[in-house]
Figure 1 (cartoon, one colour):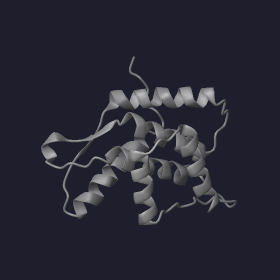
Figure 2: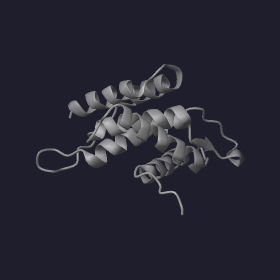
Figure 3: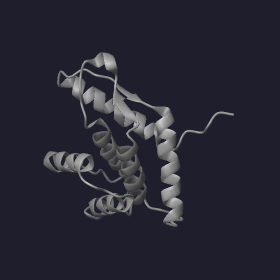
Figure 4: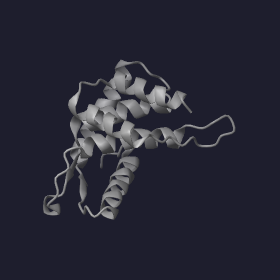
Length: 152
C-alpha cells in the first residue's frame, strides 16, 4: 500500500517549480529536486510537533510556521547535479514561500476572500538568511507567520 503524500506536498512542488521558473527568467537555469523520502520525514516531524503542542485545529499561520520550519530543518530539496548551479539557500527560500502559500490558500477575510501575503524583498532576504544561519524553533516560525497574518 503506497504511503499517502502530505496535504501540503502539492504546495511544496508548486513553489519549487515557480522558484525554478523565476530564476530561469533571470538567466539562472537549474532544476530543484524534491526528495520524497525526506518529505515523509518532514511530514512525520510536523505530525509529532502538532501532537506535542496539542493544537487541535491550528490556523493557517500555525500550520505554515511548522511546515516551513521542518522543510528548512530537514532540507528535502536540492539542485540537480547537471544544473552546474549552486544555490545554498534553496530549502530556506522554498520553506518560506511554502509558508506564505499555505497562509494565502487558507486565510480569508470576513467576506471569504483570500488574503494575499506579500513580503518586501529586503524582508524576504533577511528571513531566508535567518532561516539559514540562526536558530529557529517551530514555535518561533509560528509566531513569525502569526505576526505577518495579523498585519493583513
